[in-house]
Image (cartoon, rainbow, N blue to C red; front, side, top):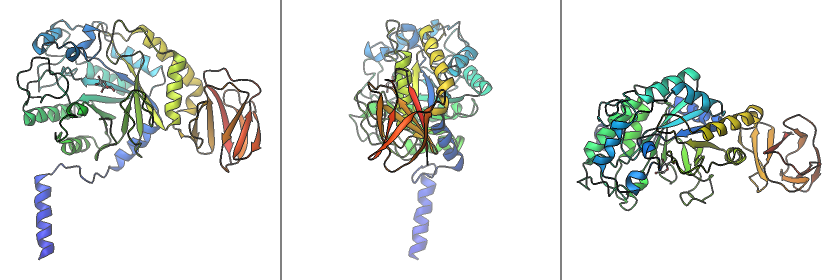
Length: 434
Ligand code: GLC
């Protein structure tokens, strides 16, 4: 009798919450897609929205308390005449990046795709009238590069979006909003994104932290996550909430810091067993900022990518496209230079995992089976001790020309005898382990 009652209660529960992702068990497709994601190692983030026109970054609307109705008028003049998805994808592929993450709707609330759930979108509200996401998706599928979609949980434009910590000065009338209406809207849009644009590699959420002063706020994530996995089981879910991953998420995201570091103040959370990704800006801003020409050097960007790989994480490097639809010239140049490097050294990055020697100030290691790649990034010495803890080395040689590198066995590992102080962007020594 008791077991019958229990079964009845469980049945009732499952009827009431049919889409709950509690006890989330990722599908086989999803697990496969996680491994592929880990192998890809390098992606390009694209922050593009109406904010590109104001050219002061994607937070301008809230930073300057711009009235939402006035801000929306930007759409009437948005005509990115030079937008060419084929050129974007080609420039990004040239960098060696293996996926693109595109902002479909950022905090400003403007949809950069054709949606029937709001007229405030690039097809209905601009003279451009083109679904840039469709063009980008088609081009990604054609050129064989995976597409991820950024989707904000925040909306500074919609009156039904409950106010959070940001966007309070944009003149929207109703602080409480109408959560059921806004939640339905988001799920409808997510359904469009996962139905109309072919295979999507990941949904990349952002903005949960907006309710950090309201800890009881229920974002109803389990149902939303279950919806995504139902529509595309292989689609990975990541959420830039700056915490350890929640149930139903497939990757762990870090912002502006390598896993385990916290220089930007947004990280420091524990590192999970899920695939890792960290995002960083190429200059100092995500959205296009006209006054920011302070691009990181190609060497710095390569070092960041290598260090991420050494921590077993992917790097998602951002570019903010211009209002005319072009990628900034300097960014394109950096992408090309990274690509030149990846052509030679990609084998020591793609498909690797963080190596058995932990990261050190001199650099990091990556590994594929018994091949250990020692990436020397910053060493003022001709010798380098590697704590290999019992692992034997069969051979050591320079990755680039296969010339043997001398080494001697010492307590706890080996010392590489490099002959000279390494000066390359990244001097890669390959070790064959027993
Ligand atoms: C932050 C910002 C946002 C940016 C994102 C990228 O959370 O709110 O503007 O899109 O980081 O990581």
